Length: 385
Image 1: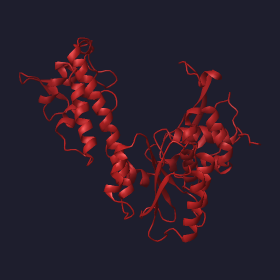
Image 2: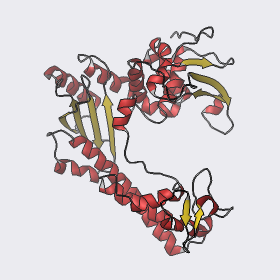
Image 3: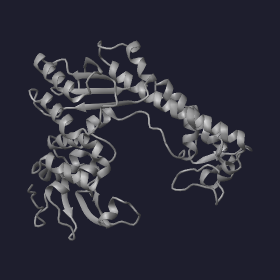
Image 4: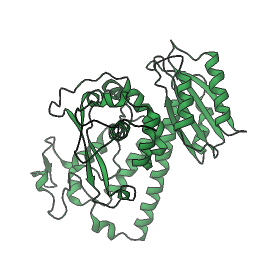
């Protein structure tokens, strides 16, 4: 397999690099440099096809960032995958995708990479926080609910999360968030409990005596802000007796259960949106499943006659998941009302999926409307057992 070497005499834009590549030649380098991403290969395929059809446009909000710099960095921390070569490739980019496409790719002098390798590193960097998107699609699809998995970020968020109206209509998400806050607040110092009395001035706290103090001055020097984050009091956690440890264990188990139920609830709502193929009563059985997977596969063929072939190619070459452990499948095909599935497309995709999925399993098919898809098709795929 031949790969074109990047010429250092002239710096090409990212779009020019991508147009010189075929994704089937990029995929081996993603697996080589980022082996943990092999399970997400179809996402990189989608990102590649989105980028190839976007119109480049530099972001006027960041006039000083007009390049994508690729450099070699030594591994300072032990990483089994990166330590094989002793270094890793760093891509200094990250912007709106239209802007990244218009930027020149500049490599350090100690690197010689092919177009396919450059594309692999840039795809990983551009999808680090998710896939896809251009500005309009990002605004439409960005999640409204963003729960912190680590520590609560300073006192304002503590108070905000306590008194705000839930911004999620998912009852399991709301219950999980409340219980998660309660679990963490058990071990916060009294300094952070003064957050309940803070004034409308965001720079001040009001202590229990009514005195206003700049909040950065409220915390002990040995127990204050660390990179903008507040940490629980380690002494309180150390002094837990048996009953408190059991209480924490029960709360943590409940949080994990609510987290799973919230995800299943969101998946059910996506399957039910703009469709009459399924009912809530039929899908509630997913809450009782021992194992469940939910994926969304979207075509980016830019040709209404090739969208089914695109999905089949993605399943065949870029989806490594083993479906043999699942016994029930729910497949919802979403299209725009102007471009519904034809009978030929239905027959083609059903015949393929019968061969791709395990035999003697229950498969339910459905159709739904999504006005944003245009000529493309989106397959919502739910497997359970």
